[in-house]
Amino acid sequence: MKSNKNHSRRNFIIGGLAAGGSVVAGQALSAGDAAIIDKQPWSNELGDGVDVRPYGFPSKFVSNVKRRNVEWLTASTESSVNFTPIHELEGIITPNGLCFERHHAGIAEIDPTQYRFMINGLVEKELVFTLDDLKRFPRENKIYFLECAANGGMEWKGAQLNGCQFTHGMIHNVMYTGIPLKLILQEAGLKGNAKWILAEGADASAMTRSIPIEKVLQDCLVAFAMNGEALRPEQGYPVRLVVPGWEGNMWVKWLRRIEVGDQPWQHREETSKYTDLMQNGKARNFSWEMDAKSVITNPSPQAPLNHARGHTVISGIAWSGRGKVREVHVSLDGGKNWRKARIDGPSLDRSVHRFYYDFDWTGEELLIQSRAIDSIGYVQPTKDALRKVRGSNSIYHNNGIQTWHIRKNGEVENVEVS
Ligand code: MTE
Image: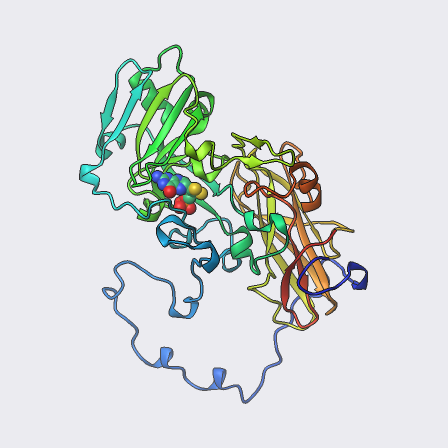
């Protein structure tokens, strides 16, 4: 095990672990418990009236549930990233206010009345749409994950960041309402030599990515709503591109233009950035699909075990850019033995899946891991297996198995086993 502490995996004796076992017991009733016998203020006084919170916010008691950044990764907040608090979330949907943000030139605040969306290039008619025009196309509702290709990027060189929010929090999973881009392109009429599109953002970075026409016609959406309400400014209000299963950088926010062409544009974001430097010094480009991945969100360094022993719930998320997640396995001994976890909630194509593993914790130290197997049979690799093929010069596309070390006192640390 590699970490800032010098432990060896052999030192871990894991005994008596049984899936299932006794159900969690409540505490015995205590006659003097003030929380039961005293009348609490919330039962005694009137609460806020209906007009006080016209747009609802979470309880003040969960104010720690928030996006966070990593100071040493934040040179300027306008060209930076913060992370989804995945250790604080349940189910599969990311609430709008907690979706991680990745901007290259800050959040563009677009006046929807001045918003225009243009189609040009290899089409029969070049067209411009207002937001209202776009909303007259037939629309679809789809739940998809968006993962930044750099999610886990800091971990290529070893265990670094102590919290799944920071190691895996460049992901969100949202229901989008949008228009199939295919329908808009049909309106413009694709020319016979149309092979690629260029998607361009209206922010000051004018983010641009080339996307092959097959993908565009298959499932890309021009989305204007997330989880039932207008896109948040951070996520591209009023319109963003949705590229299901493919790396987040291609999901252009504040989408203002689609150009149709016959070859990729080779812009900055697909040449100098978002390529994978391999062991032989050559870079792999166009690694679009996100490989299957999973992580245990609870327990994890920011969410330690707060009970001594007994019935314990392991919870986590898994996803694949190639389809559904077929199975998730959990190990308690650093990958020597694997047990099948229970997937609960909707199992949707290219969406986050929620998994649970219940067991009786004896109070011993554990090395917990999860691995996802997707619907095409791909098995999430160990970090060592990944490095054998990719070297350790990469930043992007790190889907290696994550290990958390649980100490006897319930504290959790980010480590690696080999
Ligand atoms: N689109 C524009 N116009 N500008 C940007 O900076 N960042 C990209 C992509 N789309 C970006 C953009 C990157 S790198 C990622 S990972 C995702 O948006 C992040 O989406 P989010 O902020 O909704 O999490």
